[in-house]
Length: 273
Image 1: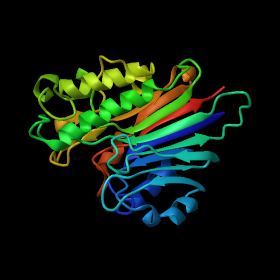
Image 2: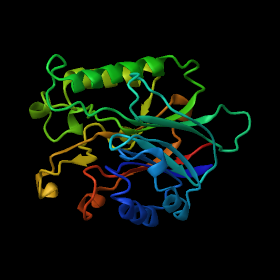
Image 3: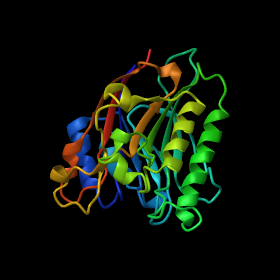
């Protein structure tokens, strides 16, 4: 089975629906995971996505904030959602992709939006940063609780709001005290990856020595010249899917689109045997 998976923090799906349509026409993903949809579930523009060719839709939403959605051309046989910190935030949705491979464990796709964490990297002074650290700890505990690492077929995508490597930010030294690249965050992400031997798909296709960004601040008018980016968006797979992600691209050109998100889409092509 071959399919194209895309993940994109859209920063309001209703505001940027025309950009999603443009992206879908250009790249033809089979499964699209969106974060920060910023709408309740009954406000999600289902008819527009159905018209784009996505009849299978799973949404976790809330009023004005957060929210994630997974839309698919491939049948989905199960939907679930996690509330890792017990605060009712809409930050996760999972689906089981009906890949038709009899005898295999389910192919589960997790779509996450991890808290941004505010501006002050001090949990004593910033409740949002503490919340982010708690969420990362809960993610690690949830991941570690899954047994049979070698057999579980899972893909995890989304805006994880952590740039883990020195080359995932424009300046490692200058951003060590900036939320998204602080040691408390990067160390926790390393633990989350190790908790189930997750594979960092993007870094399998782009060497760790090479800069790789998916987000550029709105504050930089000429973002290409400044290139002060960070890699906040991720695609992970479990060891059972080693080698299944046969291609990966970061669509930087969408950052030039009018009224666009400050994140850009990440695409990976999968071949599942």
